[in-house]
Picture (cartoon, rainbow, N blue to C red):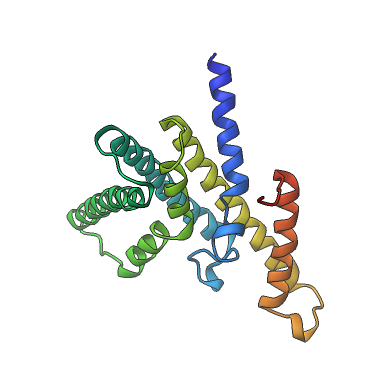
Length: 204
């Protein structure tokens, strides 16, 4: 019984890692990093933050769904603001606590850092996970597994994009395709490969 549960949660995490990742929903692999900072070390640092915000978003979506189902009978178009409100409140409480702790420790706060944290927290990936979990039917464990899988997908896709940029830097590319054009073409091919792994069918 326990192994079936573990395998089920791993399946949710793996599915999230493939489908809820940077290539499909995070602006072609750049995330919130500047181009000069787009290195594996910086990607790892950002991935921790992204994973934590996704976990917060997924738990908020699950909590919002439980709250709506138990105490309110809201139509679908009014549920999303409830999920977003719970997530925003939780984020503000955590961010406020972090700022207070840093001030007590005498550390200088960086507006750029907190601006980056806010941009990541309300980016496409956490918002997508928030809505998927909120409108889904999974348990809290499924929400946590999906959040961890999405964070892993972000990390893997970011590393793939870094590898792609490094290889393109050593390639002889025609002038008309240098920069963004060849990068978008490569990302399109990568997306097709991932679709082949996960499967896709046209909506009827």
